[in-house]
Length: 581
Image (cartoon, rainbow, N blue to C red; front, side, top):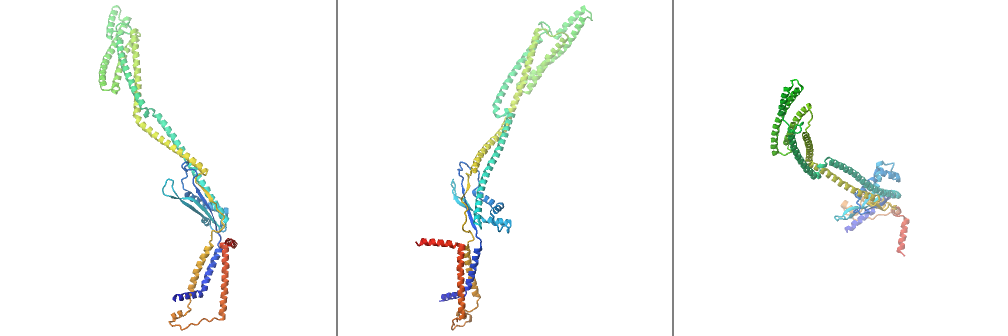
């Protein structure tokens, strides 16, 4: 009972406040329809681009492009939406002509940028070597919105073409840059190898016989030099002994006799004095023969004194040096500096001992004649030959000892030279290895560059070019009308409720009883006059006119927003023909 009364009350309120419900709803819907009709149509054209993988297997021709397609898409997208590119597009296709003068350049560029849309299409790709599937971009779509469908199509195709051109240009440029970089690196590495080769050649020339491979040859040379020096020492000793024997034989001969025994200076002096006595017995003191003899005696006295004193002193020195040499040879080797010094001293004394008698003889010969004894001359020639041979052997020995010293220096320097050579050779081998690696990479880069120039690598292909849109993308007038209806309903309910709550009129007995606290005995029905009937008829006509206007508005909205009436009639006719044979 109470629920029926509540429904009756709500019904009465709706009937009573019907114009507060109809007017806001109709006004809002009408306003929404006007807005929907006045909004310009915006068409959207979309092009779909497929990312085609490399046509040649990467195992045969590895690509030098290591970036992912998503990275290149984002990079090209930044170029497309750049200020210069968008201004070029606006001038080419006259984009937003009515906004060009009203907006600043930044606002104008931002408006165009918002009309460009990029959407990637991803898919899960299973790696060739197993592992978790990864998300990779396999295609992407490019779209542009404009009030003109032809402009939207043209700009979308222009952007798609720009993407493909930039992708080819980017990949080719990257491949070419990689090749040029490897060529430059190969050139630098070749110069480094040439420099190292020059250093190795110079090092070999500077340390030719100090390198490790010459160690055995140097040791053979050392052994050979030791043998040669030993042989020369033996030859020198033999010649020294021969020279000593020749000197002894030479001392026993008279240079001017026919081969008789050579008298000592004291014997000759005594003989000369005897001959002077015989001459004095026959001649006077001033006789030339006596004077010559006295001169000869003076020379013999001088020669005898010098020779005897020198020979005695030289013999003593030689005896002392030979004893010292024997002791030194027992302690040291033949090459020891002390032994060599003693040998040089003995040789000097022996030469002086030879020169002293020779000087006396030359002094005597200057007063007389040259040696005429053939035996003496022969021994003297042999003695000179021995001296020349000894001098030659000693010179050869000095040369060999110098070579020996040089070889020992080379052997001692060999470890350090080997280390330096090994360092240079290691650096050279590393440079060659690096050169071979760069050369191999350069060959692969050139093949990859050729592949990119032939567009056989990863590329973009338009699988769906931008179409000419037949239907506006926005505004969605149906959605606008639905929103308008919902808003109108809410506004109407709110207005009716507000009017009902603000109305203080008493409409029924229950309201009166609740306000006065008195019981209502009876109710009087409304009295309808002629004036009330005329007002009711006017309201009915207004309602009919309003309904007709709504119907006409709905038909016009359907015609302009949803579908042309001719098209709708044709579709309806075809549907009826199919259903009614």
